[in-house]
Amino acid sequence: MIRKLKTAVILALMSVSALPIAGQDLLARQAPIDRRMKAVDSVALHRLIQNEQLESPAADLYADWDNKYAHRATELPDSFRIDLRHFCMPTTSRVLTSNFGARWGRQHKGLDIKVYIGDTIRAAFSGKVRIVKYEARGYGKYVVIRHYNGLETIYGHMSKQLVEENQEVRAGDPIGLGGNTGRSTGSHLHFETRLCGVALNPTLMFDFVNQDVVSDFYMFRRDSYQSEGLAANKLRGVGAQEVDNDDSEDEELATTAPAAKVERTIRYHKVRRGETLGHIARKRNTTVNELCRLNHISKSTRLMPGQILKYN
Image (tube, rainbow, N blue to C red):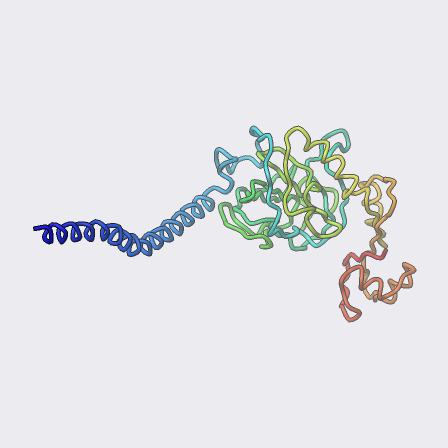
């Protein structure tokens, strides 16, 4: 009797101890399935978010998608981190001819960059084209792009638009050609950066002279972006450069770009037909090696008329 009781107790204990093992086996078998389901869910969620972004970039900042207005100011966030990575300079020109801010008794809401008719203009960031229009007394032929990082960029006075409304573009895609359309006194690109319809000084983020962005990110703050924009003009605006041209456009640049005192003036030379690096070096009192170093070119680089070279 006692032996039977012992046997029953042992069997009971064995069955109880086996339960966690069976449970662990079940969990072990279930784990790969859970991981696969989680991966499927992640892919589906990523695709859903991606599709929503394509439909309306930066939808968390903008209530709607409106093709009627180039810009309409809405409520600004107190702060917002703008991702400047994966950018492309809208033009290879390093010459600014007019700053952001007060000009001729009114506010100039962007930068003017010297380009020539037919020069390629590119999307600064990836996004979706919101507007492609013509405005005779303003932007001329212009394009507005809403980007995934929250910014909207405006490209004005172009001779030709190469994109259509609601078209998805990637950073660096050609969107138009330089021109002199609309309210313009000479061929140039009018370039604006806006957040929630409010104009921000592009020099807060872009350094056209060095063809780069200022940082990987720009932290927008509603209570300080205006004063920061004034400081950026002094660091990277028209007053921080000097352009030496050899043709009639000297007067345009001289009158548009106000003089400013800076510790080190950057000077540029615009290549004329038939000029060589040796000719330019002698004219600007420098060397061919220095011209190559400053402009990241080689001695065998073919110079094109109108090309801008840094020489100091």
